[in-house]
Length: 278
Image 1 (tube, one colour):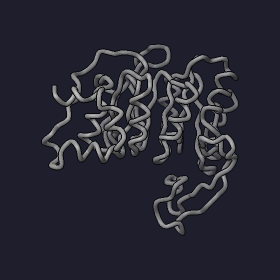
Image 2: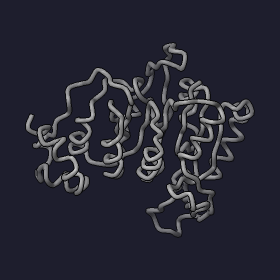
Image 3: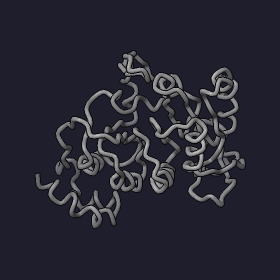
């Protein structure tokens, strides 16, 4: 039995694909309005215990039971724990808080499942503390994706047991139509991905995998932002390693390393020193 956790499930735009890949899907979102609509729209799947909707805001502190959540008045799809616009543009509500690791353990125990097929994390720049919670609790799904708005996300993944990686830039999903996937029964299917979907994961993403030594050069070349890093626990056949392009930025390597994460330079010096000499 396979299970997927959709962290930041929004309007459920990933559900069709995920049900091709797993027997059980758990959608987690802090926006009550969106969760209520999902519960109504997917009532049969919920009754059959195939889909579970959790209306919670994730935290890394068990002592925090509730938190403020901000719903954008003009578009509740762009709601967040950390508003970037004028606070007057949001409606503040109180939402139940819980650690993701606790939620995952609950479902694994409920269904007697030993491993997670995939965890998709997309929670408006808060991906880092969720990754930290997962990794500290030794939860390593076979496949994992997170948005890289923060250098802390890169740091967590660099020191994780994941071996194989793909990178999916925001906007690339517009090109992902008629994608061939392998479903949960290893049967080939053709899938179109909806607007604002997170897209495919793992081997379903067109193109090959990169090894861990390609992570830092990729983000030095492309910067942080709307980029999903997809991680797989297993060794794959790798594409040639990505190299840092010294001609991409006038400021040079030192400038971009400093921008990504100052202490990362010291921690990774031995690992990557020879990478840029190749």
